[in-house]
Image (cartoon, rainbow, N blue to C red; front, side, top):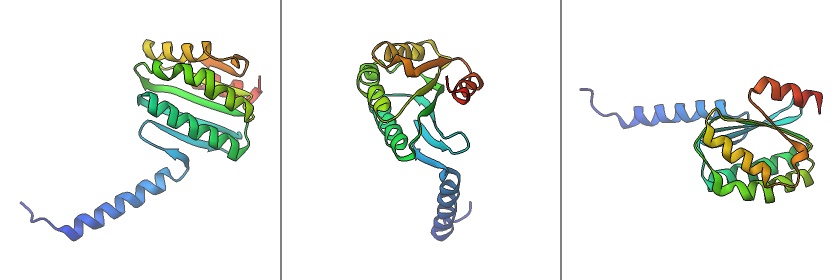
Length: 155
């Protein structure tokens, strides 16, 4: 067995952190549960949610998305739940009743919401939409390409 080399380990760690910074540098916000990216070529935000969501993760990611929408002054969001599993109903009333109206007030006109393939997650998405008075800005999709086409058309 090779002896432990603290210096080598430290250098490998620095290199790994540098590589991660390079990879994640395109993101406005990066966490294990969501990445938010500004897609300059389309002038929209892309939120890629991953894994199990909690009330805290949903609220944190949504607030970051609201900040980004204001900062980039865009009116479209591609909200991708393709990689989400499980149910997050504790946050549904807040998403629909609080956050989505604030997004619309901040300039949101088109919110393309891609369903997760898991049934339980779809329940959370649908409940969030039922809980909002701004349903006119939200449209759900089964596939990302259809959502992109809708956002590009702008209706």
